[in-house]
Length: 115
Image (cartoon, rainbow, N blue to C red):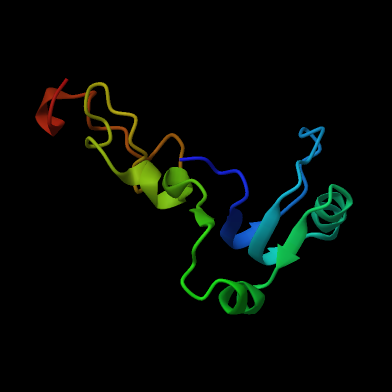
């Protein structure tokens, strides 16, 4: 399915990325657009819509694609998975702090789970 000619709908912010050299002509709908990004999109011949304008232009949402950011980026995701301290586990433990006195028993003594 081609994305050419479709409206990119982003429920979030659009910011400028200097690593992208050429911005193509596109139609964008977002909650907020930073000023440098707005200038680059309009300079390329694109259009920027608010959600109200998008809904009045496309009541059924046709010719649009919903773009979402990374879901696993949340800090809470680091705590999910195998138990912290278990072999081959990269899960972040819930601790008060990091240092000499914290999370020192598991995996170091057989009486505390495993060795």
